[in-house]
Image (cartoon, rainbow, N blue to C red; front, side):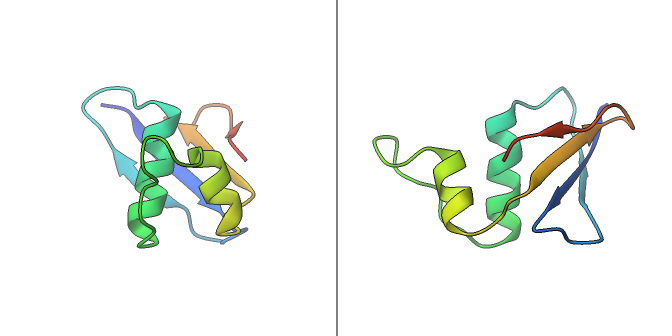
Length: 73
């Protein structure tokens, strides 16, 4: 059961969650959007990265199970 920590907007405390299986990067964006009450874009709308950037969520990075950090934005 992977455990994720997601940091965004240089917040000192990460958003933490676990999942029954590995999550895709778009699901990480969706978790952050849900936590921040940001509506998901329509399928034909802007990309998740564009929506995150427009809401000034950068830098957005995460770790999985205390592993190496990955930067999304």
